[in-house]
Amino acid sequence: MSAALQKQLDQLVRNGQAALLKGILHGIEKEGLRVDAQGQLSQTEHPSGLGAALTHSYITTDYSEALLEYITPVFKRSEDALEFLADLHRFGYGALGDELLWCTSMPCDIPNEEDIPIARYGSSNVGQLKHVYRTGLKYRYGKMMQTIAGIHYNFSLPEALWPALQELQQNKDSLRDFKSAQYFRLIRNFRRHGWILLYLFGASPALCSSFLKGRSHQLETLNEDTLYLPYATSLRMSDLGYSNKAQSSLGICFNHLDTYTASLHQAIHTPYARYAAIGLKVDGEYRQLNTSVLQIENEYYSDIRPKRVAHSGEKPLHALQTRGVEYVEIRNTDINPLLPLGIDQQQADFMDAFLISCLLAEDALIDDDECERITENLKRIVTRGREPGLMLQFGEGERSLAQWGAEILDMVSQTAAVLDRNEHGNVYTQAATAQRQKLDNPDLTPSAQILAQLREYKLSHCAFSLAQSRAHRETLLQAPLSEERQAYFNELVHKSVKDQTRIETEDQLDFDQYLASYLAQ
Image 1 (cartoon, rainbow, N blue to C red):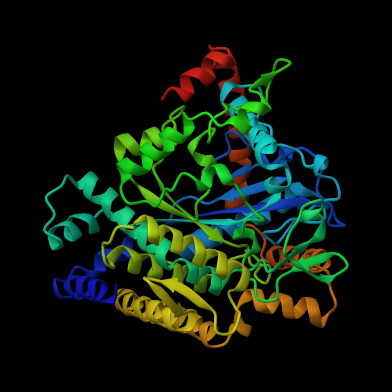
Image 2: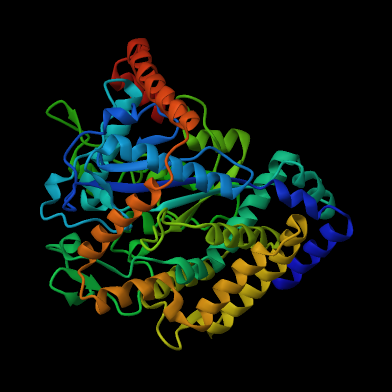
């Protein structure tokens, strides 16, 4: 992997084209549970002061009505995305009253799963589709899964880079096909090496015991209200968070766009007996969108997704098939409760250098055996990532996390050096160096620091998270919104309400017809 990366970096520098890497585009999506002042799950509707969740560009809900989601626009500088995200938090707190935004990926104490409200989006067909999809998730996986939160890091390369890369690789495909193939190259290398992100940034080593109430598990008891694993990095990314035996049989390992979309299309149209037993429409109410392995492509859970902005009413899979990959969505990022936004600038800088390294590294496909190794390595990392001497599967044998991790960081450092030349600074190199310190000393990782605080102060996961949530709110509100940004957000609230009303008024089809047409794409 390192030789291919070094060759392409050297060629870009030699040809005077390394500056084309400057135009990386970034977007951040961050979920967070709304809780009351005591840390209990909010039972209120999506706050009206935040606008309509269906149509607001930047503020919506995810699976649960209580699971707020902030979405930034696309920026060339990750600093601008992070600042916009901070402003969304500041604006949001103005509409939350006494409520807080829960600062960890794993949810607050929820004694009764039935108290989790499923998100609603009004009476329009598209609003009903979103709600029925989430109802289907309840029946398929349980409502507790719908309270898990995370951060999605959206990343795309500048348009000017692609022709240069295509010429460098002497590729004769159409530019659209070349771009899609290169994004899948990035995705494959991310799947091979993305485990290191879970080690470095995983921040969910413990959880409130109510999350697993009535379920068998292998976790240990830290205190009366907290379960954990001593060397875990990201229990959110373990099978505790999103377990699906039906999905595990799909075997999607991201070799090509056409095989990826064909596999998902087949899953959406393949009946699954256990889901059929749930029923599609019972007593006049939809329980799910269909009875297939997947209701829609978004139900397939992966740590990274190829993406394309879809037109209104268009399925994301159709958009990908017809117009190719536009960007990738990194989905394995925990919310770090030690940071006010759950992510910071250094992490974003490292992510950029890591993702470019994945793009320019060797272009090897993933066979079935490697796909199984990737799955096994992820399991080891999320549950045992900081275990001394941990070995990971590699080729026909195993290698140590420390050795493999050092090689990955060497490659990221090569990319970081090129990026720093563009910026006439050293922020990318500093980001890579900081991660090497975590590799040398696991106690510096967020997962280790969180467990250390729980032990030192004899705190439950819920008490720790509540205290951090309060502190982050105070920190963010110390820098108030500018009048200009406040006015802009207020305008978006009013616009979103009008847009939802218009959509509901303009609907012509009944929902049965609309759903059939949507699924037929």
